[in-house]
Amino acid sequence: MANPLERARYLLAAHNDRQLPPDGGAEVAFAGRSNAGKSSALNTLCRQNALARVSKTPGRTQQLVYFELPPHEGKYLVDLPGYGYAKVPKDLQAHWQAFLDRYFETREALKGLVVVMDIRHPLKDYDRHMLGYAVRRGLPAHALLTKADKLSRGAASNAVLAVRKELAAFAGDTVGVQAFSAESKMGVDEARAVVSGWLGLQGGS
Image (cartoon, rainbow, N blue to C red; front, top):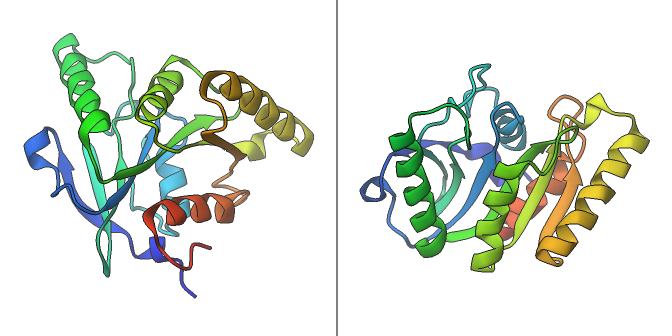
């Protein structure tokens, strides 16, 4: 059975609340610091090469980018702005902070948050900030530790355990943690199952 995420296609990019789709269905948001591998992770999960733009330029995602999952009406993947606290104008930072605050506090369709982190540099300020949104809202979250192919299997396992232990103190058992590699496809089925489950899709793997 085909993975329903493979049908993902670009729908819209929202710079403010008025541009968001109707708040009725189910959506999973993806967040990650610049160059954490978020675009590559999205492309790999959806088995597409260019769904999300992969860029060497930090902060390329500067809007909430929606991907719809036909034929499932109202089911979306949402790519959140990736620059975190990077060098962007203060007024733009303030706009995004307020926009994301409202999005996480009020968006009924939001069913879960995936925070993408480089397994070699996890849990930076931006990562904690994004996970904090989910914890305060009571949303399930999943830490996707990317670029795991850059480490030995033992080192990757140790990194997962260390992140899991730190997050347990911060968020209890509400945040899942796994190693992932877009390059070697490590952890792809596990991540697909998590996202598909939150969206209520069948055939997650």
